Length: 111
Length: 113
Image (cartoon, rainbow over the protein chains, first blue to last red):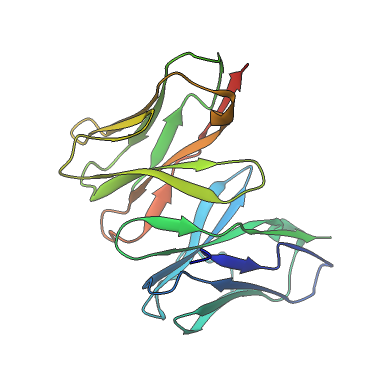
């Protein structure tokens, strides 16, 4: 398996634009997590899914953030409209059981 | 609410030295604890997972211990190498949601050749 795949690897956009981050979890994994990492706040859990169903989105900072998982092999995290304070590295992770496997992340810069 | 801290925030050691990284958590009713490694600009790689019923786990030069009663875990790295330079993070699940994993801030390790 290729592991957790995220795209794009880097995203630079202007304030107010819509941003969509994508994730393909490891096949067979039933949990999917979206994390955000910044120097100031470290690694924060935004939302996670179990069997494609959102379980806890309490970490989503604002209504500008939304996430979907239409099927077991794909998830998106959308920010609309984006703001400079959204600049961070966004990680997707999946698990089957207790061990987490992370993607390489998307470096988002909002100008 | 589960809170995870790690000490020290940064550590620099000469190659070959043995070292210990520390992780503390506020709620001892955990299901497991994981140690991760993160290289600059990369994602996180799982190193060791300790179940709540276990006291330690070993993988090569790495040994992780868990003391639930005191809310502590340590990651021991033997005979450190420059390739061990990275940030090491510990993570535990929330008390009420065993599948909701919370991360510590990490320890940045530099092994000097």
